[in-house]
Image (cartoon, rainbow, N blue to C red):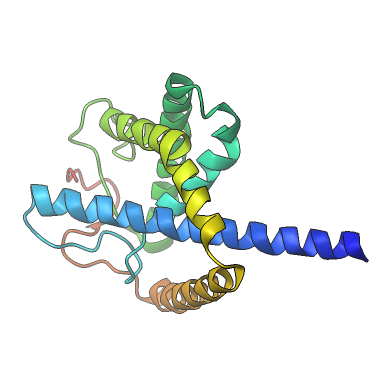
Length: 194
């Protein structure tokens, strides 16, 4: 009985650890994208298909990086290189899926050096490499300290709220994705740089 309770406790702790990490990384990704457009376009643009302040591709990519690379967090160059490759593969796959699902591109790097079908580019890979290195080598130790200082009940309540809001947003945006000005390029391969 005690062993079953310990496994259940571990599973719940693991679940809220990753849910909170997912939302933190999704929010950081959203801030990053909004900041890029504030600087380059001088405009406030919500850069995701969802209405909320999160970009799940950053959350999913960050979780994937943590799962795959946490054992090598002390090897910064290797973490950088693997992060660049893994995130570029995720970004390419997400671009293909989003275009297939909604017939729009949410980003297009056709005007950037060393791009592949406008879906990924060298600059993006370098940024992802740096982001993965920062995540695994610097941010995760801070996150783990903050996570372990939070009361378990507060973590569970926060997870419930975040998941409920996200599910409602995802359900709405599955039918009505955010596609306003500066968000998406209609059609296939429009050639616009973004």
